[in-house]
Length: 69
Image (cartoon, rainbow, N blue to C red; front, side, top):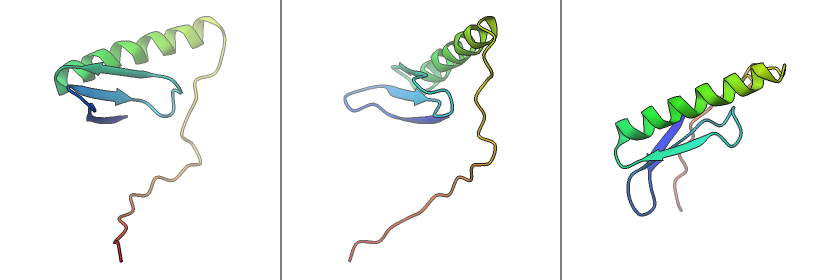
């Protein structure tokens, strides 16, 4: 999950592995509660439709800092 300050206010939480699964809230805690509900709904819908859940298997996540010259 990625959580970040909103452009104008609040927080935005997204789940990259669940494409399109994004939520927001006025506070960080509210955004986390809301995205948890969005994740549950996404997973339930996939399972009800007999579709597999996406995974991050085989991917590597690296954080990189770049210096400006």
